[in-house]
Image 1 (tube, one colour):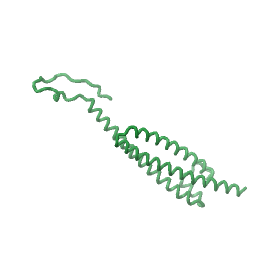
Image 2 (cartoon, one colour):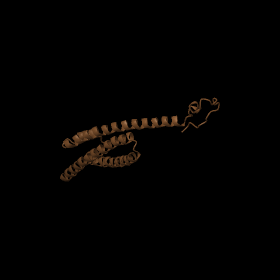
Image 3 (cartoon, helix red, strand yellow):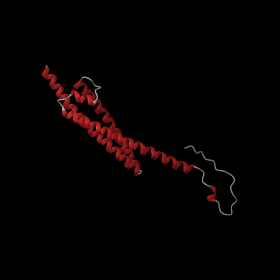
Image 4 (tube, helix red, strand yellow):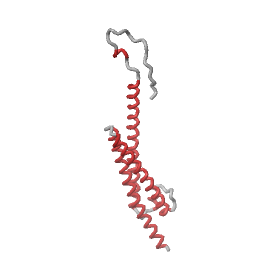
Amino acid sequence: MANESTSDRYDAVTALERGLKTELALLDDLARGLVDQRSAIAADDTAALEQLVQQLSRTLLTLREARRQRRILVEMVTGDAESRLGELVTCLPEAPQVAILCRELQDRAVAANRELAINQTVIRRAIQSGERFLQQLLTAPNLDSYRQQSDPPVSGGLLLNQRA
């Protein structure tokens, strides 16, 4: 019975290693997609931007599923599904590869988060720029520039709804 338990734990650790590698690849895809998204914003390529948004959504869904699988495997290995990666490392001294993968996963998650923060800033600034452009476009033009030299000054105004 103890041999079967050891075998199950070994299988769970092996599956956990595969799962962590999958998560690493997904985080790489996410970070790459975020960089591509910035490029599409800079190029004003709406078709590419829409495609990237869909791709990023699929990546995030797959990443969420991979993390759900990790929780199941962590529970099999440690008995606690809510164990953090750092706690997992201390529970598995016989699996140094898991420790390496956990550290790498944490580093890549931080890198992907940094890319996301950059994109949020870029998108926010693009929206602000677009709003300023619309505001300038929709505000009343200076009527003096449209008058001919001999025309009398215009006393009326132009009303526009400046709320867009």
